[in-house]
Length: 252
Length: 274
Image 1 (cartoon, helix red, strand yellow):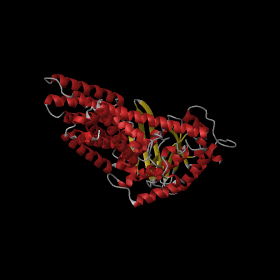
Image 2 (cartoon, one colour):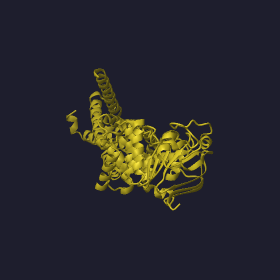
Image 3 (tube, rainbow over the protein chains, first blue to last red):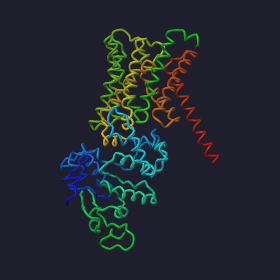
Image 4 (cartoon, rainbow over the protein chains, first blue to last red):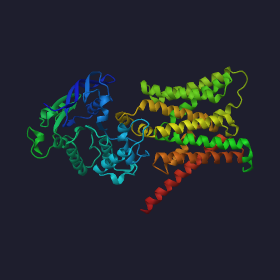
């Protein structure tokens, strides 16, 4: 492949208190990838994203992001964590939350500039939340909050977007809208999305990885039931519409 | 009360109350939104060790308290960030050991400890001018830090993980925040005493939170409410000859409970109208 590799994981092992969470993971993400990672809860999906961010240190293996250690590449990564368990009463507005994404472009002791204001405004328009800019974040619906957190990740102007279960709190009608926004975004950046929603992931992503402590599959999105069963370690009822042949996820 | 304002001790008391309100209005907002009330309680109680040391060495106990509160703040931060000990366990250890150290020092000091009660429960009427000067400097330090690092502290309190990702030095900022809490405790010791410090850190903020969803405005309102509580409590304690620290706390707490009650009432009224 002539494409530029932006994330390279080699033989990654992660343990929490002697319980291994990731075993021997090798994964490459290229410049224009839209990669979906599926797998059961507790399968290490969130941990894998945190390894790419350098928030979790593997006890074995090497991580390279944009050719550097992950800590030094964070400024090029936009990150949306799994369902924010933040305090609903926290006194902060939508505008202030999105502005947090500009910190990396500003730095210690400095004030946010006119450029930062313009970037926040543009991004809020993009996710359709500009009208809510003065609302307290906790007063929005789950889906609206999710859009604000996505805006906060996008406003960093990332080259890689990491999404952890981004559709968990969005109602089905808005999920379509959300995935279409990602379709639009992937022209300009690489996206890695973690999800347990096999059906939805399969429609929009270009590549799929199946993760349950080990990476069972990594490549184009036609997955066989055998791979899914190996990942989930039990027979899986595929969540696909219409007839379900061997190449399950092709059907949309 | 009005004629009492002519006395220097009363002017000092009002000034001390105002300076304390500024410190607890600003730092209290972070204590409340980041849920660090009991960390603050731990730091306050551990500072008793420094008060004991002050008596033992014959220096100003408030200076001793400052070293102990800064030390215990840094220790709680270091223990919870670098070891596997839980935060509340670390608080419990420092809380108890600080107080025990204070008791040992006081028992080693010959004679009896004069105005020990005023450090425990505060006596705003006996604040010497030197302590007011120290409170003024500490307030200046706290305001300077918050103005310089406002956006960093917002990220730290709202979302540490995202802060780390965008490059905020969260661990060092957290230690700095603990130091600011420690300094605030020192400012408050003279006014309400170390036992009652957490009240002035939380009551004004809890009330301010009902009025606004903006951190800067919350700091301003909390400072105003803090001043209202200390002045009102001081006036009541003067009229009724009651201990000032405890009266300030009970006055503030009652105002807070009434405000909560009214907002509940209003909410249920609206619910029944709809």
